[in-house]
Length: 385
Image 1 (cartoon, rainbow, N blue to C red):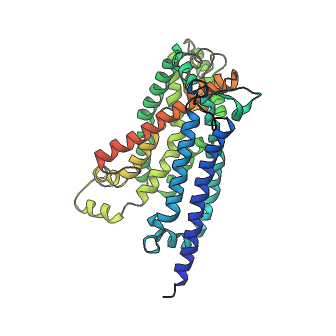
Image 2 (image 1 turned 90 degrees about the vertical axis):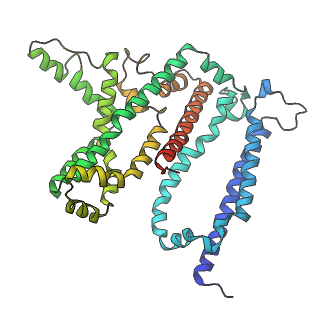
């Protein structure tokens, strides 16, 4: 039976994907075995875990698993069946769109995946002369050093507090804004409002801090000048630990709430207009249409964003906190995991310890991401994955 032109194109594409799977597996697995060989673990008659730690063995085992998975994918993945591969046919029809995604994928690969080799620093005693590859393995010593410090639990607790409260306070606001914008029917006014609330997103946090300083500085701030002119005492908001959280939440809302409406407005645009027409015929007012039509129709977008936000609870906004903190708040309310990693790594040169702390942070974020997805999926039947 002669193959169609589309089938031949698919077969060629499938072969390329198989080759990519295999090469990726060989590269990752080979990299793991290479690390082990470099550190002299292979060929030793006995494993000295106290000196060399577990990571070499774990890395080699992970490399073997990835290599095995790549080989299986190369020969056995059912998605390589022509009849079960609408994705490849879609890829051929819409290759221009995928090419537009390619720069973003390359960016993520270069700046998010390639630096991952540095994770091994979490299990090493880093020496500048030896470098990352040749520094001695120390097992879990860096993690033990961190958790044995009194400040560790204060930093973790403060990070969780800021992450959870910021999520509770800021997450609903873009949804409410999107619903309100949806009720605006004057196109020019609606576009003007959208442009105004989008603009703060493009303002960097250092400029944001300059604006806040100009407004609330104890010496020369516009707000304090106004208070003094009214015969009131000036308020030191910038250096007061009690007002730090309020400044944090307020600047987050002002900067990101408008930008966050984009996804929800796009989801609302996709709601069938006939649903609103039927609701109006049944006598439903605007508020009822919002609660019984709009919100249920964009529920998937809301749950997706909620899961992603929960997955980053431990990753408090470093740029924001770093710029808003002062000498009075740096070691107390403004000390989170990211700033502590910065202090240990950049300021004090303890790169191995800071890498271990960062790895712990990402592990917790990963658990939160999968956990929130599991809970939401059980409650609503819809999850992110």
